[in-house]
Image (cartoon, rainbow, N blue to C red; front, side, top):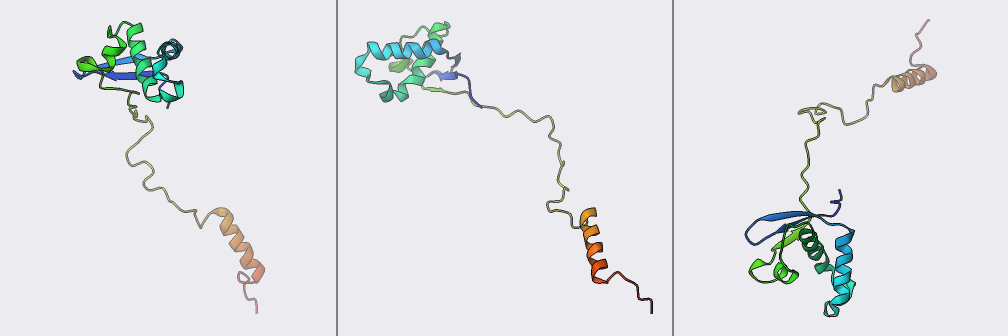
Length: 132
């Protein structure tokens, strides 16, 4: 399942900040690339884009006051930016033991197969009674 732009920032003290990135954060990254020619092209910044978008979303929503430099270097640098872990919710239809005794192979005694067998026997004369 897609995370819809949700990211989790892990700080050095162990705290986490959950953010929702938007188009505004993506556009801010592109603007920063244009202003910081030393960063290079977009294709050269795959590792920088996600942390930048998370930082920008946190700054935009008031969850951090750190500058980009503080967010990425020194004692205040974030340790990680990642998508939130997906927790599989228990399926409400799961029932312990359900399906354990369900046969794995096709039944050999289905009505259609027994009819075919009977018809074959009658055609070969097996099912006929001897009237001598």
